[in-house]
Amino acid sequence: MPEHFDGAYEDDFESVLESTTVHRSTIGCIIPAYNEEESIAAVIEGLLAQSRVPDVIHVIANNTSDNTVKIAAEYAGPHEVTTELGTQFTEVFVHDIGKNPDKKVGALNYGYSLVEGYDYLLGVDGDTIADSRAVEYLEAEAVGDSRIGGISAIYSIDDKPITGTIGKFLIAGQRTQFAAFNMQNLLRGRNMAVLGGQFSIFSTNALRDAMKQNHQSTPWVKDSEVEDSLLSLQIKSAGYLTKISPYARANVGGMTTLKGYDAQQVKWTYGAIELMWPGQRGDTKGQPFHPNLRLRWFENFGMLTNLFVRVAFLILLAGSLSISAFVFSPLWLLPPLVAVLLNLRMARSIKDHNKRDVLFALLVFPAEAFMWIRLGHFMRSWSRFLSKKKVDNWAMQAKAESGGGSIGHWVPMLILAAVLLAMAVVWNLIGPVAQSSILWIGWPIVGVVTVLQTLLMFTKLVRRQHGFQV
Image (cartoon, rainbow, N blue to C red; front, top):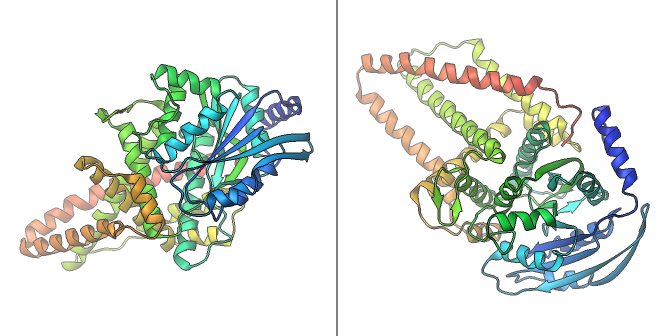
Protein backbone atom coordinates (compact mmCIF):
# COMPACT_ATOMS: atom_id res chain seq x y z
CA MET A 1 0.00 0.00 0.00
CA PRO A 2 1.33 3.48 -0.84
CA GLU A 3 0.18 5.22 2.36
CA HIS A 4 -0.70 4.23 5.93
CA PHE A 5 -3.93 5.29 7.56
CA ASP A 6 -5.87 4.06 10.57
CA GLY A 7 -5.22 0.33 10.91
CA ALA A 8 -8.82 -0.89 10.65
CA TYR A 9 -9.42 0.87 7.36
CA GLU A 10 -6.09 -0.28 5.94
CA ASP A 11 -6.87 -3.91 6.77
CA ASP A 12 -10.32 -3.64 5.19
CA PHE A 13 -8.87 -2.16 2.02
CA GLU A 14 -6.16 -4.81 1.80
CA SER A 15 -8.84 -7.50 1.94
CA VAL A 16 -10.81 -5.78 -0.83
CA LEU A 17 -7.73 -5.70 -3.07
CA GLU A 18 -6.99 -9.35 -2.39
CA SER A 19 -10.52 -10.37 -3.33
CA THR A 20 -10.40 -8.48 -6.63
CA THR A 21 -7.19 -9.83 -8.11
CA VAL A 22 -9.44 -11.63 -10.61
CA HIS A 23 -11.54 -8.98 -12.34
CA ARG A 24 -15.19 -9.24 -11.47
CA SER A 25 -16.26 -6.16 -13.37
CA THR A 26 -15.84 -4.43 -16.71
CA ILE A 27 -14.60 -0.88 -17.16
CA GLY A 28 -15.13 1.31 -20.19
CA CYS A 29 -12.90 4.39 -20.30
CA ILE A 30 -13.83 7.58 -22.13
CA ILE A 31 -11.47 10.51 -22.76
CA PRO A 32 -13.15 13.71 -24.02
CA ALA A 33 -10.40 15.60 -25.82
CA TYR A 34 -10.39 19.19 -27.05
CA ASN A 35 -7.06 20.30 -28.55
CA GLU A 36 -4.97 18.01 -26.35
CA GLU A 37 -2.09 17.32 -28.76
CA GLU A 38 0.50 18.08 -26.08
CA SER A 39 -0.84 15.59 -23.54
CA ILE A 40 -3.03 12.95 -25.21
CA ALA A 41 -0.17 10.53 -25.88
CA ALA A 42 0.93 10.58 -22.23
CA VAL A 43 -2.68 10.11 -21.10
CA ILE A 44 -3.20 7.01 -23.25
CA GLU A 45 0.21 5.59 -22.32
CA GLY A 46 -0.64 6.16 -18.66
CA LEU A 47 -3.84 4.13 -19.05
CA LEU A 48 -2.05 1.32 -20.90
CA ALA A 49 0.51 1.23 -18.07
CA GLN A 50 -2.13 0.72 -15.37
CA SER A 51 -1.95 -2.38 -13.20
CA ARG A 52 -5.65 -2.79 -13.99
CA VAL A 53 -6.11 -1.75 -17.63
CA PRO A 54 -9.59 -0.56 -18.67
CA ASP A 55 -11.35 -3.10 -20.89
CA VAL A 56 -11.78 -0.50 -23.61
CA ILE A 57 -10.52 3.05 -24.12
CA HIS A 58 -12.45 5.56 -26.24
CA VAL A 59 -10.85 8.89 -27.16
CA ILE A 60 -13.59 11.31 -28.20
CA ALA A 61 -12.15 14.35 -29.96
CA ASN A 62 -14.58 17.27 -30.22
CA ASN A 63 -14.21 20.67 -31.89
CA THR A 64 -10.52 19.89 -32.22
CA SER A 65 -8.32 21.93 -34.55
CA ASP A 66 -4.88 20.53 -33.67
CA ASN A 67 -3.22 17.10 -34.02
CA THR A 68 -5.05 15.38 -31.17
CA VAL A 69 -6.76 12.84 -33.42
CA LYS A 70 -3.62 12.08 -35.41
CA ILE A 71 -1.55 11.46 -32.28
CA ALA A 72 -4.25 9.41 -30.55
CA ALA A 73 -4.74 7.31 -33.70
CA GLU A 74 -1.19 5.98 -33.30
CA TYR A 75 -2.45 4.02 -30.28
CA ALA A 76 -5.68 2.79 -31.89
CA GLY A 77 -6.24 -0.96 -31.96
CA PRO A 78 -5.92 -3.92 -29.59
CA HIS A 79 -3.29 -4.02 -26.84
CA GLU A 80 -2.08 -6.92 -24.73
CA VAL A 81 -0.72 -5.81 -21.38
CA THR A 82 0.96 -7.98 -18.75
CA THR A 83 0.96 -6.72 -15.15
CA GLU A 84 1.16 -8.25 -11.70
CA LEU A 85 -2.56 -8.94 -12.05
CA GLY A 86 -1.90 -11.08 -15.13
CA THR A 87 -2.27 -10.66 -18.86
CA GLN A 88 -4.97 -8.17 -19.84
CA PHE A 89 -6.46 -7.11 -23.13
CA THR A 90 -7.85 -3.76 -24.13
CA GLU A 91 -8.58 -1.86 -27.30
CA VAL A 92 -8.20 1.83 -28.05
CA PHE A 93 -10.72 3.56 -30.30
CA VAL A 94 -10.43 7.14 -31.54
CA HIS A 95 -13.58 9.06 -32.48
CA ASP A 96 -13.54 12.47 -34.09
CA ILE A 97 -17.10 13.75 -33.67
CA GLY A 98 -16.21 17.03 -35.37
CA LYS A 99 -18.06 20.24 -34.57
CA ASN A 100 -19.99 19.60 -31.39
CA PRO A 101 -22.21 22.41 -30.02
CA ASP A 102 -22.43 20.71 -26.62
CA LYS A 103 -18.63 20.74 -26.25
CA LYS A 104 -17.29 18.50 -23.45
CA VAL A 105 -20.77 17.45 -22.37
CA GLY A 106 -21.51 16.24 -25.90
CA ALA A 107 -18.28 14.23 -25.95
CA LEU A 108 -19.03 12.70 -22.53
CA ASN A 109 -22.52 11.64 -23.54
CA TYR A 110 -21.23 10.22 -26.83
CA GLY A 111 -18.71 8.23 -24.81
CA TYR A 112 -21.42 7.01 -22.42
CA SER A 113 -23.38 5.59 -25.36
CA LEU A 114 -20.30 3.50 -26.23
CA VAL A 115 -19.73 2.02 -22.75
CA GLU A 116 -23.16 1.97 -21.09
CA GLY A 117 -23.12 -1.83 -21.22
CA TYR A 118 -20.03 -1.99 -18.97
CA ASP A 119 -20.21 -2.15 -15.18
CA TYR A 120 -18.22 1.04 -14.74
CA LEU A 121 -17.47 4.17 -16.73
CA LEU A 122 -14.03 5.65 -16.16
CA GLY A 123 -13.93 9.31 -17.13
CA VAL A 124 -10.49 10.75 -17.85
CA ASP A 125 -9.66 14.28 -19.01
CA GLY A 126 -7.37 14.67 -21.98
CA ASP A 127 -4.61 16.17 -19.83
CA THR A 128 -4.79 13.86 -16.78
CA ILE A 129 -2.12 11.26 -16.06
CA ALA A 130 -2.81 8.82 -13.23
CA ASP A 131 -0.51 6.80 -11.01
CA SER A 132 -0.08 3.25 -12.24
CA ARG A 133 -2.45 1.64 -9.70
CA ALA A 134 -5.19 4.30 -9.78
CA VAL A 135 -7.73 2.27 -11.76
CA GLU A 136 -7.06 -0.80 -9.60
CA TYR A 137 -7.74 1.15 -6.40
CA LEU A 138 -10.90 2.81 -7.75
CA GLU A 139 -12.31 -0.47 -9.04
CA ALA A 140 -11.49 -2.34 -5.81
CA GLU A 141 -13.38 0.11 -3.65
CA ALA A 142 -16.32 0.45 -6.05
CA VAL A 143 -16.72 -3.32 -6.33
CA GLY A 144 -16.39 -3.69 -2.55
CA ASP A 145 -19.39 -1.43 -1.83
CA SER A 146 -22.43 -1.49 -4.11
CA ARG A 147 -23.66 1.75 -2.51
CA ILE A 148 -20.90 3.71 -4.26
CA GLY A 149 -22.21 5.48 -7.34
CA GLY A 150 -18.93 7.16 -8.15
CA ILE A 151 -15.45 7.50 -6.72
CA SER A 152 -12.79 10.05 -7.55
CA ALA A 153 -9.02 9.98 -7.43
CA ILE A 154 -7.04 12.56 -5.45
CA TYR A 155 -6.02 15.31 -7.85
CA SER A 156 -2.86 17.36 -7.89
CA ILE A 157 -0.66 19.04 -10.49
CA ASP A 158 2.83 18.00 -11.52
CA ASP A 159 4.85 21.20 -11.21
CA LYS A 160 8.16 19.84 -12.53
CA PRO A 161 7.59 20.76 -16.21
CA ILE A 162 6.32 24.27 -15.38
CA THR A 163 8.46 27.21 -16.48
CA GLY A 164 8.19 30.95 -15.94
CA THR A 165 7.67 32.88 -12.71
CA ILE A 166 3.93 33.46 -13.16
CA GLY A 167 3.34 29.84 -14.17
CA LYS A 168 5.25 28.45 -11.18
CA PHE A 169 3.44 30.84 -8.83
CA LEU A 170 -0.01 29.90 -10.16
CA ILE A 171 0.69 26.17 -10.10
CA ALA A 172 1.97 26.37 -6.50
CA GLY A 173 -1.28 28.09 -5.55
CA GLN A 174 -3.41 25.57 -7.42
CA ARG A 175 -1.58 22.65 -5.78
CA THR A 176 -2.45 24.14 -2.38
CA GLN A 177 -6.03 24.78 -3.51
CA PHE A 178 -6.44 21.16 -4.68
CA ALA A 179 -4.82 19.90 -1.47
CA ALA A 180 -7.22 21.85 0.76
CA PHE A 181 -10.26 20.69 -1.22
CA ASN A 182 -9.16 17.05 -1.23
CA MET A 183 -8.35 17.09 2.48
CA GLN A 184 -11.72 18.58 3.36
CA ASN A 185 -13.47 15.80 1.44
CA LEU A 186 -11.28 13.08 2.96
CA LEU A 187 -12.01 14.34 6.47
CA ARG A 188 -15.76 14.42 5.78
CA GLY A 189 -15.91 10.64 5.76
CA ARG A 190 -14.33 10.62 2.29
CA ASN A 191 -17.62 11.93 0.90
CA MET A 192 -16.68 13.70 -2.34
CA ALA A 193 -18.62 16.87 -3.08
CA VAL A 194 -17.66 16.79 -6.78
CA LEU A 195 -16.80 13.70 -8.79
CA GLY A 196 -14.47 15.58 -11.11
CA GLY A 197 -14.23 14.42 -14.69
CA GLN A 198 -10.44 14.46 -14.44
CA PHE A 199 -10.23 10.84 -13.19
CA SER A 200 -13.37 9.31 -11.67
CA ILE A 201 -15.12 5.97 -11.99
CA PHE A 202 -18.92 5.76 -12.13
CA SER A 203 -21.25 2.82 -11.67
CA THR A 204 -23.33 2.66 -14.85
CA ASN A 205 -26.25 1.44 -12.71
CA ALA A 206 -25.98 4.66 -10.71
CA LEU A 207 -25.87 6.72 -13.91
CA ARG A 208 -29.00 4.99 -15.22
CA ASP A 209 -30.84 5.56 -11.94
CA ALA A 210 -29.82 9.24 -11.88
CA MET A 211 -30.97 9.65 -15.48
CA LYS A 212 -34.32 8.00 -14.74
CA GLN A 213 -34.92 10.07 -11.62
CA ASN A 214 -34.19 13.32 -13.50
CA HIS A 215 -35.97 12.36 -16.73
CA GLN A 216 -32.77 12.63 -18.75
CA SER A 217 -31.70 10.63 -21.78
CA THR A 218 -28.02 11.23 -21.00
CA PRO A 219 -26.00 11.43 -17.76
CA TRP A 220 -24.56 14.89 -18.39
CA VAL A 221 -26.71 17.91 -19.29
CA LYS A 222 -25.53 20.78 -21.45
CA ASP A 223 -27.22 23.61 -19.54
CA SER A 224 -24.89 23.45 -16.52
CA GLU A 225 -21.54 25.23 -16.26
CA VAL A 226 -20.31 22.45 -13.96
CA GLU A 227 -21.55 19.22 -15.47
CA ASP A 228 -19.56 17.08 -13.05
CA SER A 229 -20.94 18.85 -9.97
CA LEU A 230 -24.53 18.50 -11.17
CA LEU A 231 -24.08 14.80 -11.96
CA SER A 232 -22.56 14.29 -8.50
CA LEU A 233 -25.65 15.84 -6.90
CA GLN A 234 -27.93 13.65 -9.00
CA ILE A 235 -26.04 10.46 -8.12
CA LYS A 236 -26.22 11.37 -4.43
CA SER A 237 -29.94 12.18 -4.70
CA ALA A 238 -30.52 8.80 -6.37
CA GLY A 239 -29.38 7.15 -3.15
CA TYR A 240 -25.73 6.39 -3.95
CA LEU A 241 -22.50 7.44 -2.26
CA THR A 242 -20.03 9.80 -3.91
CA LYS A 243 -16.54 9.07 -2.57
CA ILE A 244 -12.90 10.11 -2.86
CA SER A 245 -10.23 7.42 -2.79
CA PRO A 246 -7.40 7.86 -0.28
CA TYR A 247 -5.04 5.89 -2.55
CA ALA A 248 -5.78 6.56 -6.24
CA ARG A 249 -3.95 9.63 -7.51
CA ALA A 250 -3.83 11.59 -10.73
CA ASN A 251 -2.03 14.68 -11.99
CA VAL A 252 -4.24 17.09 -13.91
CA GLY A 253 -3.39 19.95 -16.20
CA GLY A 254 -3.00 23.26 -14.38
CA MET A 255 -3.49 26.83 -15.54
CA THR A 256 -0.23 28.70 -16.09
CA THR A 257 -1.63 32.11 -17.13
CA LEU A 258 -3.74 34.60 -15.20
CA LYS A 259 -6.29 34.69 -18.04
CA GLY A 260 -6.65 30.93 -18.21
CA TYR A 261 -6.89 30.49 -14.45
CA ASP A 262 -9.41 33.31 -14.16
CA ALA A 263 -11.66 31.89 -16.89
CA GLN A 264 -11.56 28.39 -15.37
CA GLN A 265 -12.31 29.54 -11.83
CA VAL A 266 -15.08 31.93 -12.88
CA LYS A 267 -16.76 29.13 -14.86
CA TRP A 268 -16.53 26.72 -11.93
CA THR A 269 -17.69 29.25 -9.34
CA TYR A 270 -20.50 30.56 -11.55
CA GLY A 271 -21.75 27.01 -12.12
CA ALA A 272 -21.58 26.24 -8.40
CA ILE A 273 -23.59 29.37 -7.61
CA GLU A 274 -26.28 28.22 -10.04
CA LEU A 275 -26.57 24.93 -8.14
CA MET A 276 -26.57 26.70 -4.74
CA TRP A 277 -29.05 29.43 -5.69
CA PRO A 278 -32.50 28.92 -4.07
CA GLY A 279 -34.34 29.30 -7.34
CA GLN A 280 -33.98 28.31 -10.96
CA ARG A 281 -31.99 29.73 -13.82
CA GLY A 282 -32.95 28.19 -17.15
CA ASP A 283 -33.25 24.44 -16.79
CA THR A 284 -30.89 24.16 -13.81
CA LYS A 285 -32.78 24.03 -10.54
CA GLY A 286 -30.93 25.28 -7.49
CA GLN A 287 -30.47 22.82 -4.63
CA PRO A 288 -29.23 25.00 -1.74
CA PHE A 289 -29.70 22.32 0.92
CA HIS A 290 -28.11 19.42 -0.96
CA PRO A 291 -25.46 17.76 1.27
CA ASN A 292 -22.88 17.85 -1.53
CA LEU A 293 -23.15 21.65 -1.63
CA ARG A 294 -22.33 22.31 2.02
CA LEU A 295 -18.66 22.62 1.18
CA ARG A 296 -19.53 25.12 -1.57
CA TRP A 297 -21.46 27.25 0.92
CA PHE A 298 -18.53 27.22 3.32
CA GLU A 299 -16.14 28.16 0.49
CA ASN A 300 -18.26 31.12 -0.61
CA PHE A 301 -18.85 32.33 2.94
CA GLY A 302 -15.11 32.02 3.59
CA MET A 303 -14.27 34.04 0.48
CA LEU A 304 -16.78 36.73 1.48
CA THR A 305 -15.22 36.92 4.96
CA ASN A 306 -11.70 37.11 3.49
CA LEU A 307 -12.79 39.92 1.18
CA PHE A 308 -14.45 41.90 3.99
CA VAL A 309 -11.53 41.57 6.42
CA ARG A 310 -8.89 42.58 3.87
CA VAL A 311 -10.76 45.53 2.37
CA ALA A 312 -11.99 46.81 5.72
CA PHE A 313 -8.52 46.53 7.24
CA LEU A 314 -6.96 48.53 4.40
CA ILE A 315 -9.62 51.26 4.70
CA LEU A 316 -9.39 51.52 8.49
CA LEU A 317 -5.59 51.42 8.45
CA ALA A 318 -5.41 54.22 5.90
CA GLY A 319 -7.96 56.25 7.88
CA SER A 320 -6.11 55.76 11.17
CA LEU A 321 -2.78 56.76 9.67
CA SER A 322 -4.29 59.87 8.10
CA ILE A 323 -5.23 61.29 11.51
CA SER A 324 -2.28 59.77 13.42
CA ALA A 325 -4.59 57.46 15.38
CA PHE A 326 -2.93 54.17 14.49
CA VAL A 327 -1.60 52.13 17.41
CA PHE A 328 0.20 48.88 16.61
CA SER A 329 -0.44 45.79 18.75
CA PRO A 330 1.64 42.58 18.55
CA LEU A 331 -1.65 40.65 18.72
CA TRP A 332 -2.24 41.69 15.11
CA LEU A 333 0.51 39.31 14.08
CA LEU A 334 -1.40 36.32 15.43
CA PRO A 335 -3.88 35.87 12.52
CA PRO A 336 -1.18 35.88 9.79
CA LEU A 337 0.97 33.56 11.93
CA VAL A 338 -1.87 31.02 12.24
CA ALA A 339 -2.55 31.36 8.50
CA VAL A 340 1.11 30.64 7.69
CA LEU A 341 1.14 27.59 9.96
CA LEU A 342 -2.07 26.30 8.38
CA ASN A 343 -0.69 26.85 4.88
CA LEU A 344 2.53 25.11 5.89
CA ARG A 345 0.64 22.11 7.27
CA MET A 346 -1.39 21.90 4.07
CA ALA A 347 1.76 22.13 1.93
CA ARG A 348 3.38 19.30 3.89
CA SER A 349 0.24 17.17 3.49
CA ILE A 350 0.80 17.13 -0.29
CA LYS A 351 2.19 13.68 -1.06
CA ASP A 352 4.97 14.89 -3.34
CA HIS A 353 5.43 18.31 -1.73
CA ASN A 354 8.64 20.14 -2.55
CA LYS A 355 10.55 23.26 -1.61
CA ARG A 356 8.34 25.45 -3.76
CA ASP A 357 5.19 24.32 -1.91
CA VAL A 358 6.82 25.04 1.46
CA LEU A 359 8.13 28.46 0.41
CA PHE A 360 4.70 29.36 -1.00
CA ALA A 361 3.31 28.89 2.51
CA LEU A 362 6.17 30.39 4.53
CA LEU A 363 6.89 33.56 2.58
CA VAL A 364 3.40 34.98 3.25
CA PHE A 365 3.33 37.18 0.13
CA PRO A 366 2.75 34.39 -2.47
CA ALA A 367 -0.21 32.91 -0.57
CA GLU A 368 -1.65 36.40 0.09
CA ALA A 369 -1.27 37.41 -3.57
CA PHE A 370 -2.94 34.16 -4.64
CA MET A 371 -5.83 34.86 -2.23
CA TRP A 372 -6.38 38.28 -3.84
CA ILE A 373 -6.48 36.61 -7.26
CA ARG A 374 -9.08 34.15 -5.99
CA LEU A 375 -11.08 37.02 -4.49
CA GLY A 376 -11.13 38.55 -7.95
CA HIS A 377 -12.64 35.35 -9.36
CA PHE A 378 -15.17 35.30 -6.52
CA MET A 379 -16.32 38.85 -7.25
CA ARG A 380 -16.46 38.32 -11.02
CA SER A 381 -18.48 35.11 -10.64
CA TRP A 382 -21.10 36.63 -8.37
CA SER A 383 -21.38 39.86 -10.36
CA ARG A 384 -21.80 37.90 -13.59
CA PHE A 385 -24.42 35.67 -12.00
CA LEU A 386 -26.41 38.49 -10.40
CA SER A 387 -26.32 40.55 -13.62
CA LYS A 388 -28.27 37.72 -15.34
CA LYS A 389 -26.18 38.35 -18.42
CA LYS A 390 -26.01 35.36 -20.75
CA VAL A 391 -22.36 34.38 -21.15
CA ASP A 392 -20.79 31.27 -22.66
CA ASN A 393 -18.24 30.55 -19.92
CA TRP A 394 -17.05 27.41 -21.75
CA ALA A 395 -16.12 29.45 -24.82
CA MET A 396 -14.49 32.15 -22.70
CA GLN A 397 -12.33 29.56 -20.93
CA ALA A 398 -11.27 27.97 -24.22
CA LYS A 399 -10.41 31.39 -25.65
CA ALA A 400 -8.42 32.36 -22.54
CA GLU A 401 -6.48 29.09 -22.56
CA SER A 402 -5.47 29.70 -26.16
CA GLY A 403 -4.14 33.15 -25.27
CA GLY A 404 -7.16 35.18 -26.31
CA GLY A 405 -9.78 36.89 -24.22
CA SER A 406 -9.97 40.28 -22.58
CA ILE A 407 -8.33 41.80 -19.52
CA GLY A 408 -11.43 41.03 -17.47
CA HIS A 409 -9.36 39.31 -14.79
CA TRP A 410 -7.97 42.73 -13.82
CA VAL A 411 -11.41 44.37 -13.51
CA PRO A 412 -12.02 43.46 -9.81
CA MET A 413 -8.68 44.96 -8.80
CA LEU A 414 -9.36 48.11 -10.85
CA ILE A 415 -12.81 48.46 -9.26
CA LEU A 416 -11.32 47.94 -5.80
CA ALA A 417 -8.70 50.62 -6.47
CA ALA A 418 -11.42 53.01 -7.67
CA VAL A 419 -13.54 52.32 -4.58
CA LEU A 420 -10.59 52.93 -2.25
CA LEU A 421 -9.77 56.17 -4.07
CA ALA A 422 -13.37 57.37 -3.83
CA MET A 423 -13.49 56.53 -0.14
CA ALA A 424 -10.24 58.43 0.40
CA VAL A 425 -11.83 61.52 -1.18
CA VAL A 426 -14.96 61.17 0.97
CA TRP A 427 -12.78 60.62 4.07
CA ASN A 428 -11.04 63.94 3.52
CA LEU A 429 -14.38 65.72 3.10
CA ILE A 430 -15.96 64.61 6.37
CA GLY A 431 -15.06 66.16 9.71
CA PRO A 432 -12.76 64.77 12.42
CA VAL A 433 -15.71 63.76 14.63
CA ALA A 434 -17.20 61.59 11.87
CA GLN A 435 -13.76 60.14 11.12
CA SER A 436 -13.22 59.15 14.75
CA SER A 437 -16.71 57.63 14.95
CA ILE A 438 -16.08 55.50 11.89
CA LEU A 439 -12.82 54.21 13.33
CA TRP A 440 -14.40 53.67 16.74
CA ILE A 441 -17.12 51.46 15.20
CA GLY A 442 -15.11 49.87 12.38
CA TRP A 443 -12.10 48.50 14.24
CA PRO A 444 -14.10 46.41 16.77
CA ILE A 445 -16.19 44.89 13.94
CA VAL A 446 -13.10 43.92 11.95
CA GLY A 447 -11.49 42.69 15.14
CA VAL A 448 -14.39 40.37 16.03
CA VAL A 449 -14.57 38.92 12.49
CA THR A 450 -10.80 38.43 12.44
CA VAL A 451 -10.86 36.65 15.81
CA LEU A 452 -13.58 34.27 14.61
CA GLN A 453 -11.70 33.67 11.37
CA THR A 454 -8.49 32.98 13.30
CA LEU A 455 -10.26 30.52 15.61
CA LEU A 456 -11.60 28.66 12.56
CA MET A 457 -8.10 28.49 11.06
CA PHE A 458 -6.70 27.27 14.38
CA THR A 459 -9.36 24.53 14.51
CA LYS A 460 -8.25 23.34 11.06
CA LEU A 461 -4.62 23.60 12.15
CA VAL A 462 -5.02 21.24 15.11
CA ARG A 463 -7.57 18.91 13.51
CA ARG A 464 -6.38 15.34 13.07
CA GLN A 465 -5.71 14.37 9.46
CA HIS A 466 -5.60 10.63 10.17
CA GLY A 467 -2.45 10.20 8.12
CA PHE A 468 -4.12 11.30 4.86
CA GLN A 469 -1.89 12.78 2.22
CA VAL A 470 -3.18 14.68 -0.74
